[in-house]
Image (cartoon, rainbow over all chains, first blue to last red; front, side, top):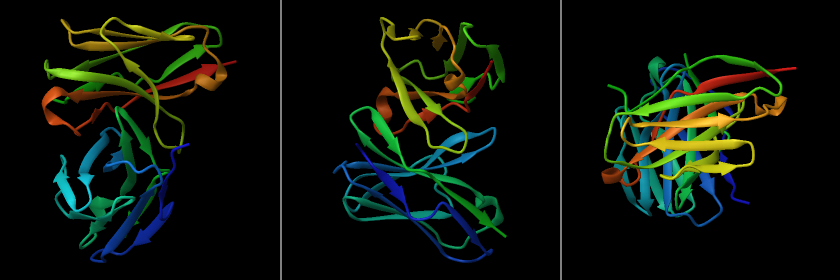
Length: 110
Length: 111
């Protein structure tokens, strides 16, 4: 069974803090993704990575950066958290056409 | 215009009913289509891919209409366990890893 884990289920941070969200997959997938999910907007792609140290912007990269130093780990960084980044963050990895999602991190920025 | 659009519902149907969801997409070059299921407070999981000729998996049937740019999901003999949000997902041919998700259609199956 493919397993994608995320470092936290719930996170509360203050405006201006630097936030790290970690994602680990155990199936040696090359492609990994970070999405955010908001009511009425669905899942929107923030960044994806197709290999170690390789990344591409998705639809809403502003205010975010990513890091992929090892194949199994893909990190999302909020350089200076803002209240409009309060959301559910979902990590995924992909094998062929199927994406496997982690359980999500609900981030609240106050 | 959104890449993928779905009727958010909610659809409330009795057990045993047949229910259908549609989803429209804007990029005529889109190549891959999927339905994902997301339970409340859980992550999305692949329900089924949608093939050009249509495909069936038990009580679930998915169809693609390229001319009208929509995909559909039909659920027959609804079960209580089918209650979930169903997400339509499209992968345009020229964008590799870019998958566009609809906002989802909420289904509640009532005893």
